[in-house]
Image 1 (tube, rainbow, N blue to C red):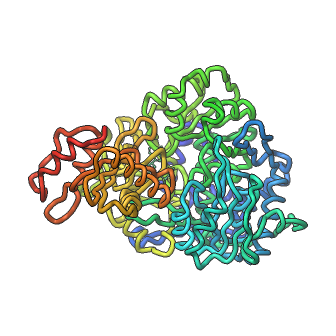
Image 2 (image 1 turned 180 degrees about the horizontal axis):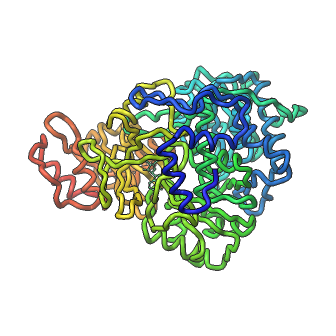
Image 3 (image 1 turned 90 degrees about the vertical axis):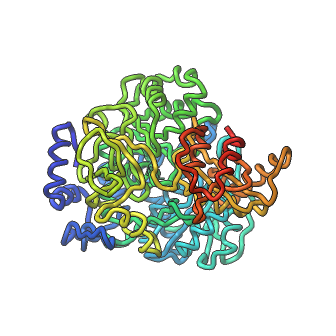
Length: 632
Ligand code: PRX
């Protein structure tokens, strides 16, 4: 399961092409199974219908926790660092984690949660968030984590889509200098959710909360005197493990479904090999558990390998821009994994915050979520890695479950701003406009994958046809990623970005239609069009063209802008706030009514040359108005 040098990588890669069943079966041997599989893989990308380790029985938490107890019970499993550096951190050994997860699982059972029930988890980055996910997995409930920065409306949509029976939340949360309500947001969200039978509240900040009898339950009370032993429920390899919502090109986010055995095998395998995790290493991934990176590389991947994983409640620039570096020194962290946005923002704060921190323990640095520009890569390498750490630029998606394209730290050739080569078992291809595979190097195309890997999504919850259409219908026989990529002369991949109507803001995905729907909820708005544009810190910023009843002027424009931003915060969450809003009298549409986004994108990028043929527009004059009014 562990690749130790480049020639081994090449051999394993070749083997994964020639004998995929054997290749994955050998890796799967490293886990604890209640019953082994009858068959490794069955697949059909047209339906799609993908099954791994058919007939096998297991519980992922026995692999994450129980099997480490014999030899590593006292080893730190979870190291929790609070928002406020003056508050004490917490360390949970594997034994502690076992007790906490079992207690949490017993509380869930007491509240009536059963195998197959969906549980929505809406919490800040506190240890109970990790316990809650693992507790669901322990009893076979399906967790659906919603990032705590999403609004009540977004939460409500996700609860309804999954028909969640229980919501787990906290009273409140802290983020930097701010304290924010959580339970109140849940109360607001569930007004429209008939599936929710109970809400379980974990205390974080001692906020007074109103408890509805027989509906709201406090974790502190429910867990009093409860046993810290809970037998793990036996799961089928293809039983659902979790749902995670992600945005696509339509207005409605979709629930990506991952199942038990395949996700487990790939999360563990990719963690071990990409980061070259060694027994006493301490891994710090700064993502939130509300995203796939947090699921796979804070929680499941590290725990499956018996690693020590760090969970940080706060933000990179509170109390100042040295917070990450303090944490690295405090806990002797060996692996640090973050997003290019965070690197760019810390770089902008100035190198003086990082220079005093020698961070001798660091060995490997990682990035994820968006393309990293060379300037940020070099800053990361020089100031954080002190020119001695390996950097891995890891490409993956909510749908892929784990990292598919990345260097293996210290093993693969390093190339700034390139994700690099596929992991063994991953067969990426670049397709041209006609859907043909391009075999040469030094080219660019649509990134597809032509063979399944264990943690590929199985469906989109409640709507299999949507899964088929989104990922498996654009190019027959391939999984389409929605990304464009280049392959250089050495066969290394460089991800360019989305080629669909999805924008990537600070590593978070939003559909343009999703933001338009939110903007259109503002009562002053008649129509809107959203595009992404290059943004120095966020990677992409959100640019909105808005048509109001009357074209606003002067002060009125400022007032309307604030009002629209407020609406988007309420509809989706503050993370989707527009960066620029331009008021227009019309949008460039073809005679058939289709918005020509190409023109809007160019103007938002500040480039009004080469707009292409605009004669097919219903009203070509509108283009001039848009160029003249561009917010630059
Ligand atoms: O466009 C790619 C970008 O993020 C998208 C996946 O977003 P999400 O499902 O939210 O998962 C983010 C964390 C894995 C991809 O389609 N992306 C992800 N990693 C990279 C990246 N773009 C460039 N380089 C990466 N390393």
